Structure formats: C-alpha cells, structure tokens
Image (cartoon, rainbow, N blue to C red; front, side):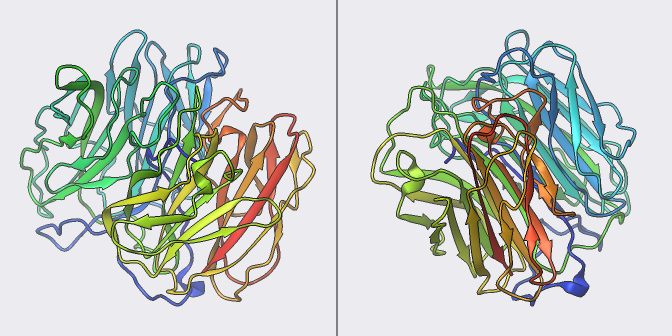
Length: 500
C-alpha cells in the first residue's frame, strides 16, 4: 500500500449539536502568540506523488477535492507539476482566485511549484488546476485550512527552486515577515517538494526548530528505480516578525558527495487575526493523506517498512484496497513509535484492509512500522486518516461488497449501517480492477479524498484507479455509497467502516 506519505486530507465540520461524546479535545497546538488569538489547522489534505505521470501527454486538468468548513477561513494551496506549463486555478464555488503568492521553477524537464492563499466560499468541494501544456512527470499538492488569519495577503514570502540538500539538510534563505501588529503573530508555512527527478532516498523528515511537520513521503516507499518521492510541509506560529529559516533535515539525502536532490522550497507568512470558524468540538478528520505505491520493477519488500506520520488526534486509521498477498499490507502487525496499538480488520467479502489505533495521545513526529513477511511491492493505494475527538472505543463496524462496475457509476458499494446511533465518521474506499475511479456521487455531504485527472488509467498516480472518502453521520440510518467510474471498471470492491 503505499509509496507514501506526502501529505493529505480533507475535513468537514460536524455540528457540535450532533457531536459524539468527546474523550479528548486537543486542538492542533502551535506555540501561543503574545495575544489571545491562536490560529489552528481545521483540516489538511495531501497527495503522495509518483515521479512519473505514466499516462502520457493528455493530462491537462487536475482536480483535488477540498471542502472548507467555514466562511472566513484561509486556505493555503501548494502544488507542483511539470515546468514550462502555466496553470489556471478555479474552484467549484466560482471564487476569484488571486495570483500565486510565489513560484519556484527548477527549469525545463524538471518541476515548478506554486503557493496560493485563498479565502474560498464555505462548502467549496474542489479546486481545479488546468495546465496550458501537456502532461508528464510529477504532480503533487498540499492544501491546509487555517482559522484566525486576518488576511489572504502574504506578510512575506521566500520561494526558491532547486535548493540542494547539503549534508542531508535542505536550507532555504531566511524570511522576515513584515507584520508586527498588536496581535503579534504570524503563521509561517513551508512546502518542500522535489524540484527534479529523485536520486536519493530520504528516510525521515525533521522540521526546523519551533516548526511542526505535516506528513512526509519517505524512502521507505520505493519505486522500481529505488527512489522515494520526497515532499513534506511544516508550519510555525511565531509571536513576532523575527527572521526564520525553515530548514528541513532529511536523513538519507546524501547520494552525491554528501549532497542530495534539489528541492523547491516555498515559504509564506500569514498574519494572525480573528476570522473563521471555531475549532470543531466533535469527531473530526484533521488529516487525510493519500498513500500510493507505483512499483516499477517490483522491488523487494523489506521485513519492516517505516514511515513518519503526524498524529494530532486520538484515532489513527490506515485503509487499503487489494492489499493482500504481494503487498506489504499483508503484514500481520503495525506498530507505532509511541506504543499506541493498531488492530487489523480484513473485510471478508472484499479483502480490503483496515488498521486502526484508538485511544492514542497526539504524536507530532511518530513513526509507524509495517511488519511484513517478504514479497514485493504492489501497485495499490490507501489513505491515512488522523482523527480528533473520537471515543476511546471508537471502532464500531465495517461492511463490504463486490458490485458490478457500471461504465459511469456504481451504487450500493456498499449499503452500510453504522453500528452506533450517535455521531461518527464513516471511512470508505472503492477498489477498481480497471480504473479509473471518480468522485463520490452520493451520499450527500460525503467528501472525496483523491485528486482527479481528466484522463487517467490504472497506471496513474491518482489512487491507482481507486477512490477514498468519508462522511459524518448523526444516526445509524443506512448509507448508500455511490461512486463515479471513469473507465471500463472490470471489477469493484467497496468497504466502509464506522468510528465514533
């Protein structure tokens, strides 16, 4: 399951009136400002890219799904694609998208990265990036929603292309924000992603002092050439407009005379304010990170596969389709560096896998280890969910079905009834033998968590023809999951699990 963890997610706000019993309410904590206002991350979504978009030159439209939870929140949207293309960004609400704050372009044959600051209409469910040129090479995105940001204007930025990892550390230039208002705070947000084809393998990501890491894709998840696809995000809340260097340490990035790959590193400053919704009090998906393996050459599977995760909440869930024999997801055990225990559930109908660790404490820089019995990596996809305010006995039940794949959609995949009659979140996945998949067509209010290309096939990075999503429920009424199918869809396997 997974070349993974670039960083991921989507999150919807669940009304506190229907919230589940809360055993833990820990907002995403960053260093307190000198004033009384603290921005918080409402949700974060990220993809796990592959180094080559193998579908060829037809991919021009690229659409991550993302639903801001409240008016006034600020969204940071960072994405990377082939150099030499000029993207146009729109969203489903028809909002005016301001120009990119900055660009880092590593040049012909390499990658170009952008950061946008957007205050979209609440309920927006996708952003769309249309490229003027042809497809090919890497695609990657991160999108993060903050509350308590006063303006969609940057208070400063520093965006550099092809910064070489020297002695395993990527070190951009210093940034000094312009803001020093009465509130006295800035959010510093850094997006670090490959600027050219990978040569080295980072095995972990250590953020700069004072920063918090958001996900990260590491060398543990290898393609057939033996290279990981590195991308990671970090952020900090500072009380003054002091200079900051958002370096990122990457053990393993030392393939050429102690030096490593070139990275695009984009850093912006956001002014603290009082805009946006309050932090949700009920069960709430904080992160949804896509995890994908593109295993050209079928490299051998190590006995232990490690990957970093950021866990703000008290519930962690990994979901993966078709992850049995031939994949590391056939592992019998999953362990975490903080000792929080994972339980494995295998749907007897579909063979889809679910691992969950409940009743955990937040662990900002955890490592999760998948223990395997050998074999080779397998082209497949999954999703990591970081969930806050879940019950200590969060897992309720699951159900799966193998339906007939229609050319345009597949319904009742599956019909699902949560095992509890209170509020919770249903996490769903659909595996497609001959993809690609499309977004969730029903339930109303369900959130898709995979990016969409206008032309894709099973070889694409976008969930490999699979699809994932989640839905906040307030009763045990039956749910009919209906998915879009963009290709012939030779076979489908849908699984849903409930957590409260």
